[in-house]
Image (cartoon, rainbow, N blue to C red):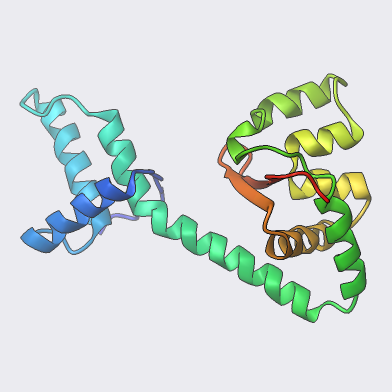
Length: 193
């Protein structure tokens, strides 16, 4: 059996994933979604190499198939991250400090209707390296654990716990996962009272 050490990640809509899973159930041709995707991609590539039909690869189809395959993993990782934050909160003795930090950061988070309101993270990082933004403006623009940790001069784990606590305490504190940065970006959907 070949050594499969390389991984390809694909995102797709829940509906597209359901279609693939229905196909698996109906045909029983493949034991898993991963094997279906590998076989489908392999058929396309081999067909092209032989010059036969199926010589073109629909990039969107492959991307959608891979997204389906890794969607569950991404969700599990997010749940694990939340559980780690919960355990950290339960074990740490400085709960009062975390509570205060959660309150302090929550009132300074950027206000927007949704996480789509964030400027692309790479643009913010580029501006910061050119000295165009710093301090509270940078923390609000990028709004990651690291940015808030630097701004409030606190340990990153403590800041992560504080932001997690703020998101669970305050219904207007939300976060969105930024794929480019590979991190959560925090915001509020209303002004702090």
